[in-house]
Amino acid sequence: MTAGLLLCARRVGERLELPVPSVLEILSATHATRSCAYEIAAELRTLLPALARPPGRPRAERAEPPASALSQIQREALRFLMRHPGCARIEGERARYGDAWRLFVIELRDRNPEVSLGDLAEAICTPLGTVEDWLRAPRPEVAERPPVPDNDEAHEGDPVIAQVETVLAAWRGWHGDLGAFCEHVRREHRIELGTSAIARILFEHGARQLARRPRRCRDEHAVRGAFETFFPDAHWVGDGKQLQVVVDGKVFRSNLELVVDAATDAAVGVAVTDEEDSQAVADAMKSGAETTGQAPLAVLLDNRPSNHTPEVDAALGDTMRIRATEGRPQNKAHVEGAFGLFAQKVPPIELCTREPGELARAVATVVALTFFRALNRAPRRDRGGQSRADLYAQDVTAEQRDAARAALRERLRRQELARQTRAARLDPLVRAHLDDAFVRLGLCDPERHVRDAIACYPRDAIVDALAIFAGKRERGSLPADADARYLLGITRNLHHVHQADAITEALLRERLDARDRFLAPLVRDRDDLLARRLDAPLALDAIVDRLVHADREVDRHFWIGAAAALVAARDAAEHRDLARRAARRIHATFRLPLRERDRLERLLLRRLWPLA
Image 1 (cartoon, one colour):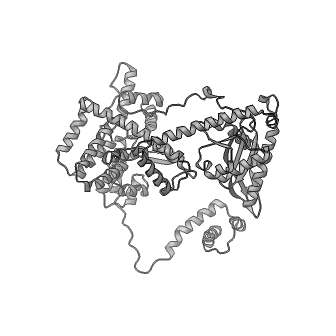
Image 2 (cartoon, helix red, strand yellow):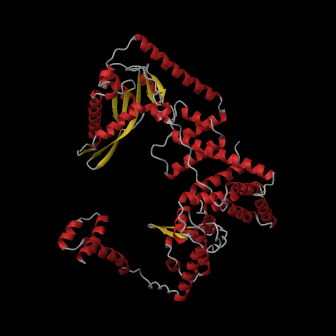
Image 3 (tube, helix red, strand yellow):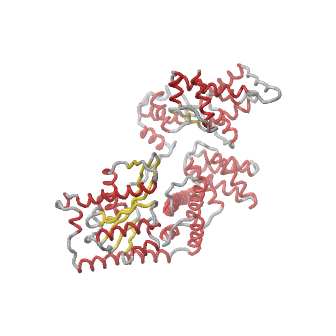
C-alpha cells in the first residue's frame, strides 16, 4: 500500500516538476513487488477524484435498467448474429464489424432509449466509443440478404456439385470478408478447400470478383550488361544514402553522398552532409576530383530534382550531367552495390560527446573514407585479382577519350531532343497550371523534367493528383521525402484508374444500347425508383445505396451514371449539396475499402464536372 501511494504521488510530482524518488528507490525501500504496487497505484488514482466533490448537491445516481430489458437486448443481438454470420467477429485482439451489425446497433438504440448507452454497449459486447461513433455517422441503408438455405440434404449425387452449392449458399448469407468466410466454410461445413479454390468458385458463379495482382515487370536477365562503360575517369555514377549516427542516445541522420567510377567500380568521391541536396553533389564531385586529379567526362545522377539544378551544373563545369533511366535502378548498380557493402561492413556508429552534431559528421566522414579506401585496394576475383585502384591506373589513349566524349555527347543530345519534342506537344494551359501548382506546393523542378512528364497525362488525372497531394500534405500523411516525383507517381496511377473507368463506361454504353439481358433488371430498378417521384435527396440516397452494395463493377458504373443524371437534372445551385450528400453516404459504408470509396467519389465528381 505504501509503495502504491508513493508511485501515485510520484506521477503528480513529475508533472509539477518537484523532486521525487525513482521507482527502484520506492520498491527497494518498501520491499514491495512491482506488479502489486502498480495495481494499487492505479486503483488510488481512480478513487482520489471522488474525495474532492464540487459544491452543491451530489449528482443523482443513474438508475439501473431492468434486467429484463438487458436480457431482451442480448437475445436480439444473439439472434441477429445467428442470422448474419460474419457481421461481427473477433480476430486476435481486434473486433471487426460489418454494415449490417452497425445498422442493427443503431436501430436497437432507437428502440431502447430508456437504456443508457453504456449498458447497451456492454450488453452487446461492443465498445462504448465505437457505438458512439456509429450514432454520429450518417446511416447507410443495407439491404437484408436472404436467409441461408439448409443444404444438408440438397445434393445426394455429385459431391463436387454439393460442395459448390454449399459454398455459394453460405456466401449469400455471409456478412464478413473472404478470409474469415473460408475459415467458416472449412470449420462449420467441413469443406476442405483452399482460399484460392473458394475464391475461384465465387468468381465463376458471379458472386464475387477476384483481386488480381499487377503484371510482373519484364525479365531483368534479358537486359543485363547493357550499361555502356569506357575507361577510368570517363563516366562516374553518384547517389546519396541516409547515414545514422547515435550520439549520447540521440539519433542524428546525415547524408552520405558517394561517387563511383563506372569502369572500375572504384569509389572516388565521398561527402557527408546534412541533406541530400545540390551542395552534397558538388562536395562529392570535388572530393572525387581531389582523389583522381581530374574531373570525369560525364556523371550519371538519379532523377531527384536537387541533382539537376544550376548549382550542380556550375560545380560540374565541363562534366556532362546525364539522368538515370526511370524505372531502371540497375543504372546505378555501381554505387548501389558500394552502399550495400558499406551497410554490411560498417557497424552501428554510437558516440558520446558534448558537441553531437559536429562530431557525428566528422566520424561519419572518417568511417566512410576508411571503408571506401579499403574497398578500392581489395583484390577482385572477377577482374583477375586486380583491385579497383589497379584498374583505375591503366593508361587511356587520346582516341579512346575522344570516342567516349563523342558517345556521351550523343546520348546527351538525344535526351535533350526527346525532352524538347515532348515539351512542344504539351498543352500550354496545362503547363501554366502546373507551374502555378509547383510554386504553391513548393516543389523543386528546375529543368521542368517532372512537370513535362506530368503534363503528358489527361487534365482530370492531373487535377485529381494535385488535390490528393495537397490534401495529404495538409493532413500530414505524405512521406517525409515526398517530392515532385511522388506527385508524378500519383498522376500515373490515377491515369490508369481513369482509363479503366472509361473502358468500363464504354462497355456499359454498348450494353445499354443492346438492352443486354443482364442489365435489364438494373434498368427496371432505376425506372421503378424514379417513378416513385421521391424528393431529389431521397432518390439520390436510394441510388447511392444501390451503388455501394453492387457486387459487380459494371453495376457500380450504371448507378454512378444514374446518380450523375439525377444531380445534373436539378438546378446548378443544388449540385454541390447533392454531391456532398452522395459523398457522405458513400463513405458511411464501411463494407467497401477506403480506396474503393475514394474511387467512387472521384468517379461521381468527374461525371458531374468533367474537365476534358
